[in-house]
Each structure stands twice: as structure tokens, then as C-alpha cells.
Length: 162
Image (cartoon, rainbow, N blue to C red; front, side, top):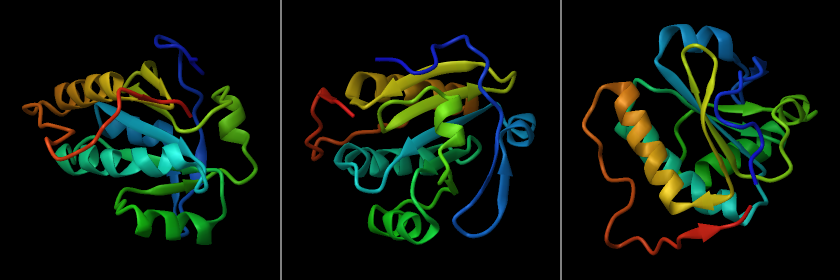
């Protein structure tokens, strides 16, 4: 199940962060080769499973922004970030305007958006192979060597539907 298919232009948006700031996709794309957008709901077990791996991605390639886009309020989103060790920005989509513009029916939904505003990759739910592909793509955009996203100690299933 795919929300926005790769090759489609990403809907631009401006959202508040859980810390009270403002982030604009259009401005961030100008300064980076790509941006990873990860839509979630704090009560979603697959989101809870996925976000620590997105944190690994964030820490491995600091030049490529990872943004969590929460469908919950600031307090719940901040608690989620703390609980799952996420240090990347958390944006608030409480009215679900951004969620609707991306055509989402499931979370987590992850998008790799390139500098020209195109969707390069879409992941709905958790798919290990797709997450590994995302890791490779982000490394390429960051112009860095690919770092492992999963370790031997991780018990990672091939798929967890959202």
C-alpha cells in the first residue's frame, strides 16, 4: 500500500515543532540533498517499533534531516520522542492537514523527498528491506559510506504492517 508514489512532487508544508518552532519543507530542501519525513501516531505499535531505527538513520547521516510528523499534540509527541530516544525534530499535524495532503491511511508512513521536491521513496508500515533501501539512499544523498541500520542483536521481522 503506497500513499504518494515515488516520482510525484511532495506537497510542501509548514508545521510547528513540538518545541514551538516552525519548519518548512521547501526551505529545508534548499539546504540539503534530501529530507526524510516519518508520519506517526504515538499509540501506534508499529511506529513505536520503527522510530528507534529512524533515530539510527538520523544519527548516521546528520546532514540529511529526519522529521517526525505527529498526528498527536505536543505533550504526547514530546513524551513519545523521549520514550523512543528520538532526537530529530518532531512536527505537529494535529489537524491532519499534512496527513491528508500526503494521502495517508496508515502510519508509520515514511517518505524520502529529494532536493527538487520529488518523492524518491515511500514506505508504509515497516518493511525491513525498504528500510535498508532508505538507509542506502540517505547515505548516497549524504555522500557517506552506508552504515548498518540493523545489528545482529536486533530482532527485526521482514514486515510489520502499519
